[in-house]
Amino acid sequence: MPAFRHGLLAATGIATAAVLVSGCSPAPAPGGAGGGTAAPASSITELDYYADEQGSAAWQKILDGCAAQTGIKIQRQTVPTAQLLPKVLQGASSKTLPDLLFTDNPTLQQVAATGALTPLTDYGISTDGYYPSIIKAGTYQDKVYGLAPGVNGLALIYNKDLLTAAGVQPPKTWDELTAAAAKLTKDGKYGLAFSAIPSEEGTWQFLPFFWSNGAELSRLDSPQATQALRYLTDLVGSGGASKSVVTWNQNDVADQFVAGNAAMMVNGSWNLARLDEQKSLHYGVVPIPVPKAGGSPSVALGGEVGAVPVTKPAEQQAAGKVLACILADPTMLEWSKAHAYVPSKTAVAAKFGAEQPAMQAFIDEVGTARSRTAELGEKYPKVSQALADATQAALTGKLPADQALKTAQQAAGS
Image (cartoon, rainbow, N blue to C red; front, side, top):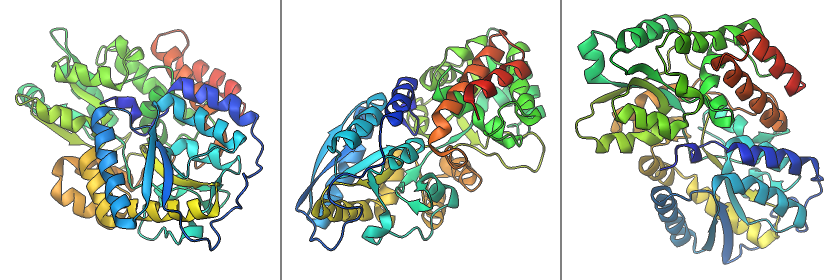
């Protein structure tokens, strides 16, 4: 299961999207801004990026269920993650969008900015019961254009046997994480593994440290941001984490953990099924440690939002019916169980946590999680890349943390 597919966008997709966004005008396609009163069509097209075997099969089951429930045939198209946003932005320009779209949540505002999406209120879809951060992730200029049936995030996953043997408790604070990583680093094995590659994946993994320390994306070189980056730089510099974090993606991090080369890792809930397959591996999950005791981590929301593009009124109404089915509580719970996501509604998430104890840490974090685009909107990709480059520069020793972030702030132009 590709780790980066879950709620994240490959760097190539972001770079291409930035170019395409600049060339897109906010003129809507023919068919009106809303669904009107047209009778729903009997079939629709749907586009997603669930290309791996397990994710694709789980999503197809959801679509088949909603097709049966609504009586609407769903013609599905799947593309690799990095290709989806460029395809959507090109479709917005050429008026060839699908009727139903599931896209990485940080891209929603970029697509909405082209005028290519319709507000979900056109289809009677309510936001009642959703986590506020999830609503923000699907909002553009005060209108909700997308909602997710489930979200994912990052937590600290640890090897119970290695921590017990070392007399280490799962860390809750940065100081405890530093101490634990140092004590667990020996015999060529590291205390902690994480991903710091120079792309959105690296930013995604750094944001819990960045945000939890009070930093904001509007000022990448703030004292709080510098302190957060220095913290990770010190972890690597002290040997508690490998210098290879600058080349590891999240799949690589999971490989290191499964192989016993790292006692702890920062990674996502999508890895739990893989960990469960390792019968000799006993793991636990806790929220990502915070700067000071008593604080709550601010992780970035991952996951895909469903949206209804501007096509034709009949197809829009049909797509709205299918999306309403996907967002219904039973379907939301089914999808979360199949894909190790957290249901987007608080009540459904509470039920899910009671049934899936290993997911509780991820559920606990959603309440204080943040949308990556809430502050910057469609400007986020440029800032994200600048932050990823700064993290890479600091961790490789090319620049001190403060200088790396000053450079990032200049590059971001915000």
